[in-house]
Length: 218
Image (cartoon, rainbow, N blue to C red; front, side, top):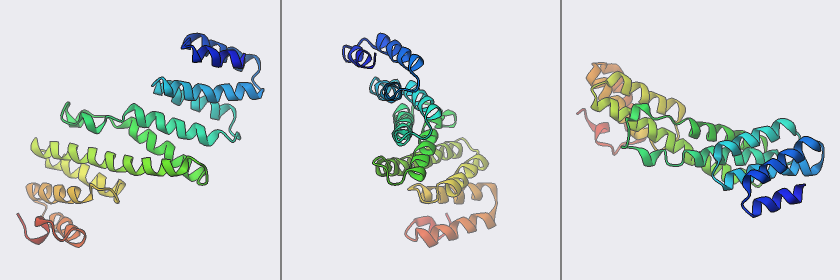
C-alpha cells in the first residue's frame, strides 16, 4: 500500500495517492509505513504548494507521534508552509490598505520555527530555521512601520505611535528600529507630548546619532 501510494503520487494521481495513504494510516496505524506515509504527505502537500494542508498534516503527525525523531522535520515543514504561504507579504505593500493587512501566516511561521530551534537546536533544520526567523522578524517589523506611516499620512498620530512602540517592544533588534523612533518623534510632536518626544529623540541619538532628527528638532 505504501509503495502503491508513492507510485500514484509519482504519476500525478494525487487524489488516489492521498486516499491510499489514508487507507494505509487507518488500517495499519502503528506500522512504520503508516508513520512514514504521514511524513510523506507533509512533503507532498508542500511540493504541490498546498501549504495549509501541509501544515495540517504536520500537526496530525506530531499529535500522533510526539516522540518520533521526525518531529523536527514536521516542525520545520510546518514553519516553511506558513512562510511560503505568505511570502509575498511585503510584495503586496501598496496594493491594499496597510491597516487591513494580516501578517498571521508570518507570525505562525515565526512561532513554529522558534519552537523548532528551541526544542531541536542540534537538528539539521535549526540553522535554516534561525535564518528564516531573522527574515520574519525584519519583515514583520517593516510591515508595522508601513502601517504606522499610513496612519501618519491619514492624520492619526496616536495610532502611528502605537504601531511604532510595538516595533520597539516586540522587534527591538530588527532593521526597523530607527524608522520606529523617527515615527515616534513625529507622532509625539503632533500630539504635543513633548517629554515623550524628547525620550524618543534621546534614544535615536544614542543609537543612530547620524539621523537628522537626532541632532535637532524638526
